[in-house]
Length: 207
Length: 49
Image (cartoon, rainbow over all chains, first blue to last red; front, side, top):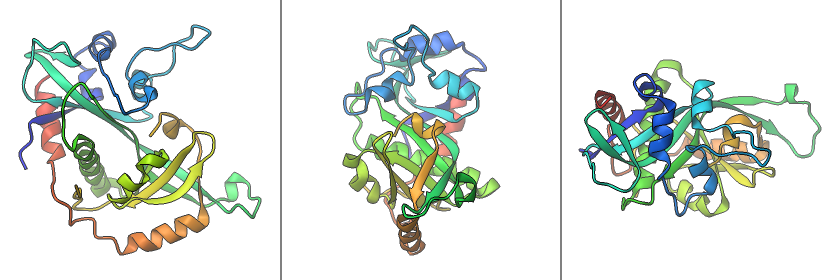
């Protein structure tokens, strides 16, 4: 399937451009259906005491995850929407996602185990998946999820690790179930459900 | 999905996990509709820099 999009990883971007440039470009990123947090993660925001909140640049610099932007492969210099300004012009930003490694622990509610005695599993975590709602993009979320799967698949071939983990709110459980994720827990602190699926050597999305 | 997912401890339910792993054993993940050639798109993206 040919695609009108390209993927730009933040790590590569920062070798040529400054953090200030991307912060300025991403200030117009809008997500109607996503949480405010997903927009704030790629912008500069502050706590009540005036200190800066950690955002995507801090996470990237600390190597906590890698962040990928989905850009149109066509320049649009006249857009008043979110674009990344690169050497040949302005490329519309359709969305972003993050991938990292994550260990989860197992607990049995009826036993009192210390953390060290719990079983643990290493996974790939899709930590953010956010579409820019300034642009019309049918099946954009699924398209980005497929990109996550294919990038994870390429790493899996080199280092292994069998499962992919996500945390999502209740309204998205059915959506991710259709993509072969299974619910495995609930995070009381964040209010999010945890779901896992296997890494596939030939992953495909079901619309 | 949330930023806290990256930084916070994640603890899942053992029983649910066992059930999920059993179901995942028989899942066919290769029967969907499309691939997007993400690695080619990544290469294309880096050429824009």
